[in-house]
Length: 244
Image 1 (cartoon, rainbow, N blue to C red):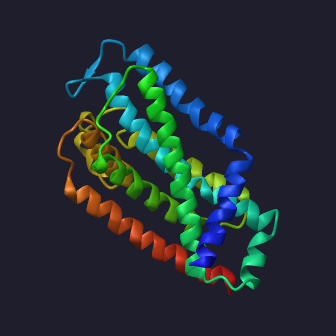
Image 2 (cartoon, rainbow, N blue to C red; image 1 turned 120 degrees about the vertical axis):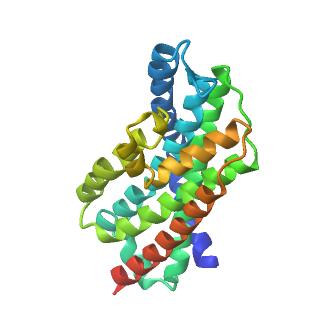
């Protein structure tokens, strides 16, 4: 437990050091999407009985919680390839499970901070939805899944450039195709079947349903929790292999 808190505290200190830059970075993307899609293209557009701006905010929450949780991989790579801090972790009396848990918690924290930024921007735009316990549970599960994925992949890649390549080929397409900017059911049937396999599709669906005050799909919660747990175990095994 002490080792986990040490890893987590280290990541929080890094976040604190560049807090305002990080906050600005988390704000720029959602602001651009809200202006371009919500206020520009989405004026007067109704989606699922809601204004497009109301439809867009939960999608941005799902997308941002994914990207910010996954961004912990960049911090790990910097520590591995530039600062050589991972070698110190190898020598320190810190259990691998503590290291993985600390990094995943740091990824979840970054994701939750980005979600708060989006919700504040939404409130300033006049959008007020239901941010209940089911909403936050979906956000945490989505963040847990992608933070675990980030830790595992950060142990596998051989360079910082490889990590950026994975982001461009997997995270970025998922961000735009996972039901964030448009309803998945408007896609062709064959595309819906493919997108149904994306975890972000399920995250966006239950985040949006809970934000609208509807009953979210329990299966999507179980899927995110199960897949997140599996990726957490994979991350633990990857750290074990990296330390050998």
